[in-house]
Image (cartoon, rainbow, N blue to C red; front, side):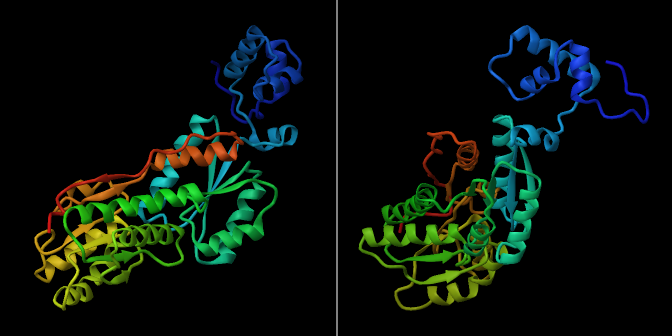
Length: 332
């Protein structure tokens, strides 16, 4: 393929049409995957594009098709494992569906920041928006910013995604009960996060199903540091009357911090207390002790989001949550 001379103008549809010996309308149909194009004509147009170094201008293309083939991702808290993993999974899912992603970052608890990020994506003509790391504030702000494009959230506030979060937390409780634990404490995530709400609900419902109530509740901010900060008050509870013997922690990073903080105070996991995390962080198997945790199908959730935005009538459901048993839990 010949190189472009310095300063050469961008190759356009007319150039491709002339090289392929077809009309500009035919080139447009090839670009938009029109079903009624003869294979030999399509091949000739594609070959001309490659020879000329043609690149699709999504912004210009959207003028004629009302689509940019781009999915907007509105994200916050990307220093946390869950949001970062979600963004990566969405990129892969979008590309598998022949789409690209455009990402805007916002402070998820600041409605003005969320609305500004949404407007930035909408101004680029995205075909839909996926909200990653959803907070109640972000959902409310997006409701105000809606402008004719579909909006979904990862992992989701709709009934099915939220239910999978709850089911995962229930698996953690069921595991501890099967090991003989009856005094099970909860360490929650931030109260404005939809994930934290769903995971709390799942744990509480599972405890009730076993005729139990939480043996104390504490809350962190998803970080390992916040888990470590809870070690002192939790250690005090362990020295009290009828103490907890196990904890369901709303994510792996807080569980890591809690285990480390308890160890510094002379409390051993799982000898003195069992701990279950949530997310199956890639490093969870290398914690000491290796962390028992709940794994969600983040890739499947991302594919669901993309399918919903593309209007697929029956998007495939992600795999159910799965308990991964390691060394941080043991029989009572």
